[in-house]
Image (cartoon, rainbow, N blue to C red; front, top):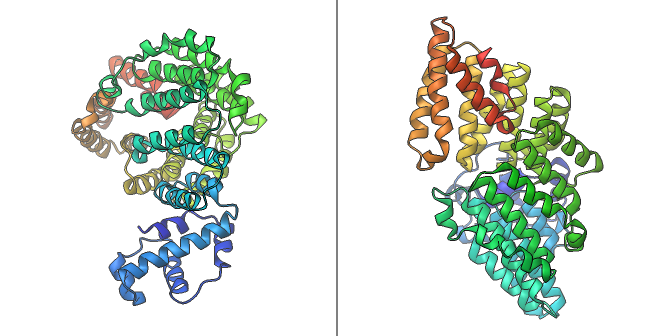
Length: 462
């Protein structure tokens, strides 16, 4: 898929109307029309496009670039960091990186003052450090952090420590997905936690905030301890007054959402629901860090609490546009949530539709955790349909697939679950009762992963 094609696919109706008003000439108009004709399907390879439009490959590349720049100007007239944030919101991380490089070269050409450079490089640092794992480039993060500090007037130790601990926090999260997280990280975070008092004494509040966030992540992924995770999140929340000046988002609201999510993951469903409800009642802006993730989690809580209409309303408002625009990870999150909703409500035809939508989106930008979820939801669907023979085949196939993964160690629970579902399908096929041991094993998985599957497996053992 070309970057132009992917960009146009991500636009809403109003945005498409806007770009259609942009003045184009000659082959620009021809390529634009050609690309529009393929918005609902895969666009041909560059060679075929060049033949159809009678242009060279270098000319095609140049026209793509010209069109994107014209559309950027129409959609985000302010340009600059606002444009980069727009591209991030749309999930265009490759385009964001390219545009950031262009903007940096333009800035260097005009030799602006340090204040402008400071703001620009801090913006880049924030954007690059928040890239998804697939696109994350630590070298680029460190470079933008270094340039921010070089541009900053009256640089202090607090500024340097902020960059250091923000990167540390990002590293803790990034390495958590590796086969040997502690080894990949290269140090024991508990040694860093001992520097808490030193940071407090120096009033290095931003560094302290990211230390607490890193500690919460450590006890989420490395040494799982729910109480300690909540303890450090509450410490981070305690700094909200001292650090609010630094963030463009409402950091108080963000920390409330973060705390609600932690409660959800620890199984404190009532408290989590109350925190989420309060945060969304007060208003959560789309530019909030992790906006789509938090929306997804709140949808799942609504499903757990049988608020089917409320969950669907939120899905329609937040995720339906993501799916329509093919927004990769955000669209897959939406498809997964729709599937869980309809499995919970018994609307199986709708459920399998969104499971297939999820597979289609995730196939283009493959992410294993989403694939595993989709495989499980598909298996549950066929069990609910009482197609036990196919459910048995799926479970065995998924067991082999999971065993073949390099990340097999972190998928241990799924290996056991595929065996359980195979046995369930086998017994159901023979119309035999399920033994208590099997029921308890499936129920335990359902409870442990309630924040992922919102209890939809309860029906399997009833």
